[in-house]
View (cartoon, rainbow, N blue to C red):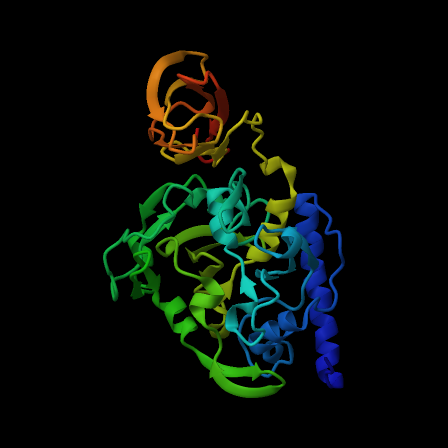
Length: 409
């Protein structure tokens, strides 16, 4: 990518500024990227990036970055449906790009995808395949907006109990009404009528049933200079469903520390991105994408978010750890066709319920056991023991009900 001299100088200055921010973030989270920032690791990644962000880098337009100046880490990560179980990814400040199925048509919009990073950060489920997840703690100490340290803004974990996790309508349309709802670091939702004069809801999204703030809806529909291939043109800056995904939450105000100063910032979590609106910013930069790529990278590669679980015997359970109220699925092929199976539950306090439940294997001798925990269930490690009444075969699984450190008890 060639730039003229003025743009090249600005690029170098911008890169120095970005690297300074990176240094602060890396220091704050005590992590070191294993690969330095560099060129794009796939032409398709560069084509995806240059469409919205090359005009910004060249200072042809004034608007915030969609991805960031450049990628900071690239690797192959495990994913079941990719060749050899590995897919190529590249991390940017505000997203992760991935090529899951390299045999797809490269001209298809979804040849390069943006991961559902926010959904994983909020739920604590690291996705390793279309239907396989690794249970982790949510990103309970990473603020969704503002400085990485000394910041009492809401974190990803603050939204765990309120974010939509399935296709359902959770709110009624409120288009045109003022936005006064607030959220703090502990996930407590309140109202501040004084903020209602600043902006309103702009669109009701029916798939997950959330209202989108007017500044974000206007941002999704903005037109400007973009690159189609090698050529600049004018068009929609982004396809919002492809780029950010569906909204997981309502827009909410949080008090965030930004560059050392406290500010009221409107935030909204989408499946792939976090959007922020800061009234005090210049008009062209009031709406910004959160640094989700950075946040996810730290979360994925820091073992402090791991949830240790004892290995199962002759069975699997998914997920292995989750919050009270979660539905768990147990699978086992250890039994004979159609036999009755006694199920015993051992709770975290060591108490046993020998007649907890009775199930039956199918015609192939397989067990598919689905159960939902009580929303008020005791947190800790549970043991489920499955005994075939005829075969005498036994399967054992363990699951853990967890709280979110610093958010729930």
